Image (cartoon, rainbow, N blue to C red; front, side, top):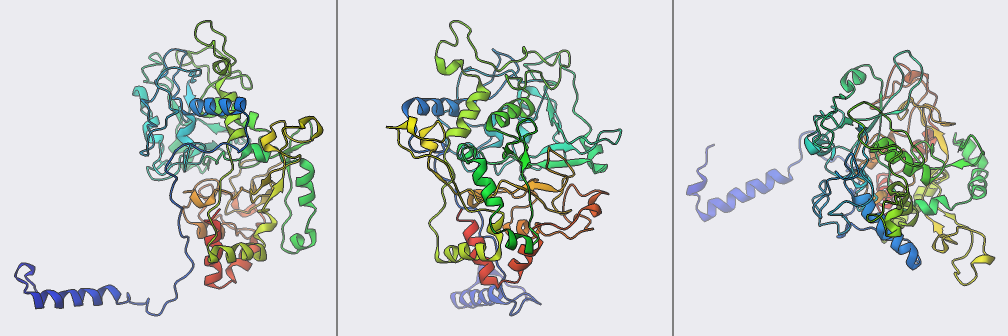
Length: 509
């Protein structure tokens, strides 16, 4: 029947609305009476300000360092001491309000090397505020051509997907690799006019199934994690051992080879300290040599136009008289991670409160340990009598990280076939869940935005082909069971309202 909407009379208009209403509520064929399953409620809204909170109780000197660190992580890097291109008061990859710490003139870094992934700390770490995870709009497409760069964005980077770091699993001779392969070079940039270094052939590596991906981790509360004593982590390892064993949960710590202490930072707990984490990020992600990593990753003639090591304490007269400016940028990045506060949870709804209880009953908390305590008491009047972190604000704090900081076998569905220290090809550190309520992408490779998918991908049987794992390869069927299998089964046996409550709880973190 053909209807002329322009000639509708009021009665016909009302009748038409009635028809439309019936269509709107009529079930699609096959969906009548189908129960609605539990669904990820999605991320909570971002805060109004881009600026994260410092840990409460910092002294004036520590606050000055924290504010300086906000400026340093916001600066846009260039290749040399005098050619840094600073953003004009805004973050170029983020549409939200201006970042007041974004510098408009040269500060104390630059020195970007021939190869890099990003040219700004907050390129990768900005969701929901400075220091967070990967943003909603992938900045790779802007970074690739900044300053006239001639880079092509690889196919595994999508405009609405996470900013992915790529590793090659094996060298051409078949031996293990696992190192980061830089996405971009400075070829074509105005601040490196003589560089002719081209990007690797990423598409060939993808076709050969030789790529593994990782997305940026949130940096919030790392000073609190750093302050947890090894003895507390070991006590947690030895707690509930019978129950863990009955559920197939084992796990181990990735340890520092030289001194045997527990390593706890990075997707595989491969970094022993936030200092190492910071120095490596400057060298690997931005190509900036520094005190910890003094040699550039590439010394290609015409492309490496800065001295090495570049980012060290700066003492040039007339330019770096302020003690805060003498501090190298990579070390200020460490200061930021040590002093930035932990993510704050939302007020629990009745459903989320129920979900918190169910999260424990199902067994998730056996790996995602709810909290630890840092030693000492926050009493600045008697610091010499206390044992604990030197920073008083880090003492005696409850660290609600929801992680045991151990690495666990996760099976083929999550395996990336990269070995780092004591962490094997399918082993990952239990990711801290604090801040989960505002994360956009999940799992180490950012393959999903859906919490339910992330939970189900913890399940993997021995001999699996890897399922939806982007890193699945011919070795996938060699992995054993995931340690999370029985916990996922217990979750799946719960009613839909119970599953929903758990999802609501996770999004409250």
